[in-house]
Length: 151
Image 1 (cartoon, rainbow, N blue to C red):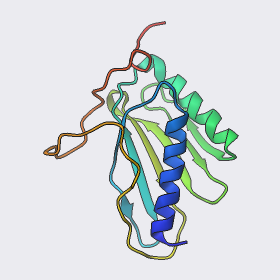
Image 2 (cartoon, rainbow, N blue to C red):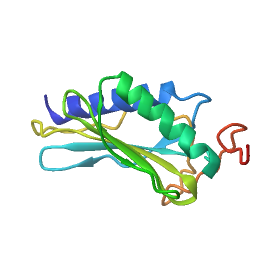
Image 3 (cartoon, rainbow, N blue to C red):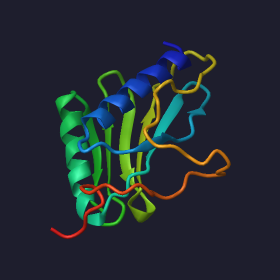
């Protein structure tokens, strides 16, 4: 497998977990980084996820990854910045972490593969960014479910 094939596999992993989450989360591509023999693909969630709903999101992802045969390697139950890390059967590292203001970040890190060029992801983002933006902003899309607070 070369870096491009590994990046495409990473996109499949990210697409599958995001398609599992209902109601849908809106997201944009984070940066793709290329190491000496590995690639990292990222998705940044633009849906505002309230503190009360973060556990729901982590639970959905945890169940899906386990059902998919992934081995959960770390669960961080931090109140403000929870995260879950797993490994696929074919050696890809996956993670979901909650950052500042409840922004969710998905990332896949490939195993070491053969060096090659890596194209941009072909997966269409479900949110858009201002073309002049220098950085990805905090979550700014409201969801009646994911953004809800209280019980």
